[in-house]
Amino acid sequence: MTTTTQTTSATTLEAPRQDAGPDLDVAAVEAFTERMLGVLDDAALAILTSTGHQTGLLETMAGLPAATSEQIAVAADLDERYVREWLGGMTTAGILRYDAATSTYLLPREHAAVLTSAAGPGNMAILMQHVAMMGEVEQKTIDRFRHGGGLAYADYPHFHRNMAETSAAIHDAALVHGVLPLVPGLPEALRRGIEVADVGCGHGHAVNLMAQAFPRSRFTGFDFSTTAIDAARAESRTMGLTNASFEVVDVAELDAMSRFDAVTAFDAIHDQARPAVVLANVRRALRPGGTFLMVDIKASSDVAKNVDLPWASYLYAISTYHCMSVSLGLGGDGLGTVWGVERAATMLTEAGFERVEEKEVAADPFNAYFVAQR
Image (tube, rainbow, N blue to C red; front, side):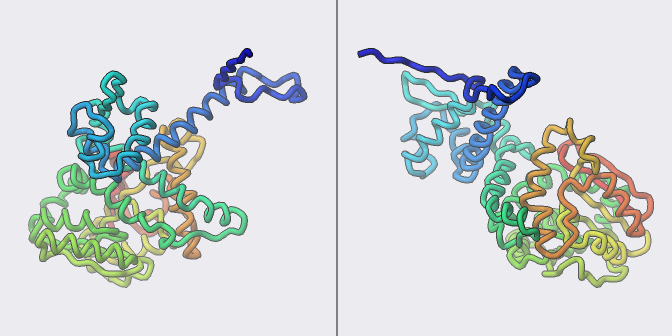
């Protein structure tokens, strides 16, 4: 009896059809097939990395020497069989190192520096959670492709948690000493004592950090999510703050006239159902000479200019599966994540702001920072 062993490479998985035409570039087909297989593998790795972050496996392994699956499972207080399978996926992806002689796994320090809290605001494992979130709503989104409309925030039970963790990494590293000084004179005014609002505050971590750093100023966070506001208030109590408050308010309905000296918005405007109305409300809420600091996605309004942006596909994906969709779900404009810095500047001007400036923060390559004066 003889056996035949067949090997299949990425470039021979699917041979071009004979009737595809004489001009078909077979090499290009094979190269594209190989690329898509890489995408498939990397997509799986994104989910594995998200799981490693959420279960604490990455942080656990960062503090361990080379260890067996049993030792890692005990240290992380997790089921060994699941841990072992996860270790296999992370090892074959080159994230972990495996020693066959001792059956041990190791997370190299260089990889831990990118995938754990050691990375600070550059922790890529946090971002991988958004890939998992998009997968959770794929079928509902496909239905909206066919019938229109959008999804509700209730369809994303982990969104506020994920966003809070994403933004907290940046705010902890740069908000007080890197972001607020972008507005000339703002840190000094905050030390003296002024009124500040944050629109679309989510879990309110930015508000609480500012309130802690500037006890003479008063801060108010607005968000329409009761769950998010509850979390913001809980953190404020834990931090012992007396100068931070939070209100459940749809900022499209915000009715405040000349109440605040400064207003902030951190990655919140592009999600709004009626962003133009929100911007106009923010301007009215500012006292004459007040400042609006708007942080939002750094990309172009022109898709052709985003081709070379390394994470552009991710931005369009998160827009499709969340940001654009939740706006449409509220009967809104569906502005989308990639509304772009050009359109952002135009909308700020149309809302009546003067001296609109776009600035950058080195610790945050994903966002543009707009300083707009009333």
